Length: 340
Image (tube, rainbow, N blue to C red):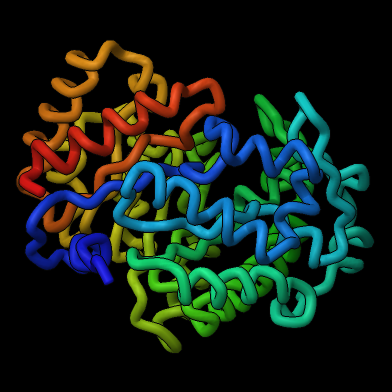
């Protein structure tokens, strides 16, 4: 087992900088498209053998230092009883948005092993195959709530913020249920064999710091506190667009803070205290010419030299239009410049 990624998460000395990409298993790969062309996205997420194959593809092709379970953050929301659809060109849709107390009351806190057994089975299958660590994951409660309240993606999050500001008791009731569900879900992933866990707060950056501290952060803190009682696997918290929230994110309880590309990693490292960091190149920078991309990676690695631990990653998910050869250039450059 190549445990370089886990060592970096724990802040231990590593021989080189480990690298993986958010959404590394997916739409930019022809191998993924060949599978996806025969099955819907939601069906794919519920087929352990296919999820295993898709998770392994980028490891075999590019030599990433960690694998992330192929799934979707919204699977757990469907298990709570909110109907979920994926529409081409539109993304996820919840046709029955949660905007009343009655709708909140209808949601259940599911047993993850009963309602999402395919996720645990995928983890077990992957552990038999992988020679690098496996990352399990979930959405953060606030990010998950935005999809339920808005009915899908949003640009301004009007309904979500309005609920939080005008009906805080209902907002808290919803977030509390999502938090309990997410906590149990991540615990189940750890028991099934996930060797690290990442919490994606994709929309955290829409909040002012004072509102993030009130309406998002406590729920993440609760989940991580629960996890600490049952597992010692490294925990990564990624607050996207969160350069203004770093000091608050440091209090989440995670081992590693994921960083987007909107701040210099060296400056961020001075602010994170006793945390390892993960990040932080712009995903679209993968479109740079080879020499420029390699130089940007070299500079980023130099800027990160004072980190307690550094895992190279993108500042968000790899985009579908990325040429696979560019991903290969990036992975090889990280390994070469950091001493592998």
